[in-house]
Length: 481
Image 1 (cartoon, rainbow, N blue to C red):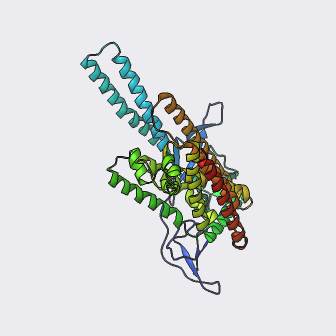
Image 2 (cartoon, rainbow, N blue to C red):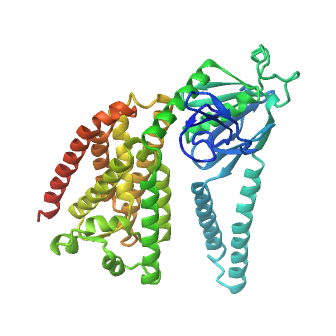
């Protein structure tokens, strides 16, 4: 057994880095519980963390004591922290959603300008001038945005960080723009209360281990934290240990990612990149006349591994990578695989029941089922997850569900009015989401090893029964004329 000297986690595997804090500082413990060796390897000199951040600094002469300097609230920007041995670097960058909105805005704005310039003058010269102007806008606006975003960067020495505290699931660092003189050292009796801050940095972390990593790094550098932060770090550490103990590896998620990607590459080669409706149906797309009337029920599952384009498979695999690992650790490998496949079949049955005349492909129904299973687990085992972990998970799940359902309904309404355009299979999304909630509620097991093992048989039978009953109900609804 090896014990990490940085975070104290006991590691039973053969990896060279700690599974929690990713450091490489171990002390080997023998059977008597004594340390026998200290490997000379050291951890990385700097660590990068993704998070949502809100940085405010004092604004003399302003009505409010603080003024927002940078913020990644809202999802258009994303915060990045880089920690080395002496500094904490805070910066924000544009997310894919923000880049998409900028590109759409440029296109609309450029189209309006060209339309006005060529409204009364249809000459070639005006058209060339308008095209050059649009090209200038297309090039200059992203560059200006990149320069503006690049300026949103702050670097703080550890002697500029006064103290930290935890508010709910957020970490707040009080800081000064100039170093504290004399600097506060680790173990000093002064907790920094006599130093008045002129700024504060509020952080929301996407992963609990990032909270642990940041607080440990800053604590080792002498930054003071209140008791609530230490308690939160202890709770997160205990939760991470239990999670890694019950499900050490997420092999199912990575297998699903590989299978979906390989099938897409094969489809691309065989279909020569032409993903037509006929081509998708030949590979096993879910289509009512073939699935129901033709008796080809294997399409209910096969369609969950097919995708209609590069962007389609890329987005689905990205979301599966993000949510799949957490859900797999909560439910266990085999329960997770069973829930994923069952949600995919239920999503396909819902699709052929609601609108059997469309051709449906994609893993999004099963992925919606994973979010539903996550919510179902939190409803059943809410006492097993600490609030500081459960709250951001529920928030991210709610944002994903509401945003995608709204986007799907708006896209379908626009396509219906225009009479053309792709249709998002909202029936499959809703069917996967609701079935996932049911399966997650009945298949949830405690994280503690002994209660989890005792509940495995009972929860497994309950989960299998719920899957069978729901599939029979959807099957009957799908074959009704």
